Length: 302
Image (cartoon, rainbow, N blue to C red; front, side, top):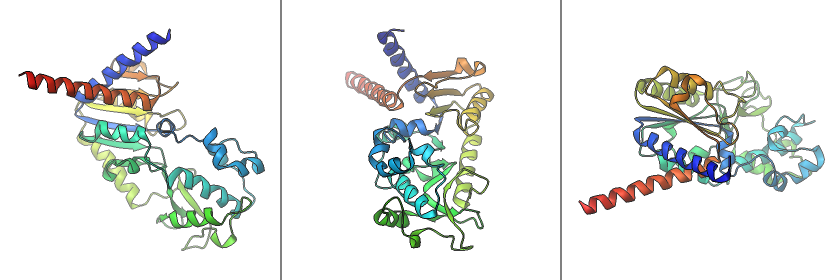
């Protein structure tokens, strides 16, 4: 396909997505790491090299994702890395443009968001907290590593202290986070094993999401999947496919660079856009602005 034909296809897809949003009675956003990458929060390349140079030199790290599994020899080394990982992905970060523009598309609509991202970007962009379900946790929270109790702890103050005092890829022993209940090690609240803590707020968000799906069942509901790959498809992708199949009035949209697909069973009620999520969202916004301009001119003429 020539570049011109590719661009024409994207343009038509943008127009169709705009129509879907206008017709939808409810919108469910399902977001994966591809959305944050489109917003500039990549885990490799220049961003990783600039912020983790000494860790790369000492441990041979290649990106932030794989570095998260590195078998550090001590807690002091582990938290030197992880405090920096948390800091550059959670604190002192602006809301990504892709997120703020996405909010502009849905803020006046009946929407809910489910995400596997743990970088707090939806909250930073201004999405209503009651409409966000962050399934996999949050970089900004600590928990007992062995989940001896179900409470989560804000970690901003501790992380900033670790950043300020780390040297030679280590933090001082006294800054290593310890569980206030059992005295054991603490961990970032990320779903990586059977000890992941789901606190009261997590369950409240889960119930909110389930209620939204239930209350809008049978309506013209748009399942808008953004940057979700095949790492954990059972959380967003497969349920979106199933919910679209079950509701003949539902429509499924997938925007993902290189991984936009839909099963044959819902192909006629699907739109798959192989493109940059940020650019597509920006173009859909422009399409809406053109519509508003046209409506304004029509009203003046009348």
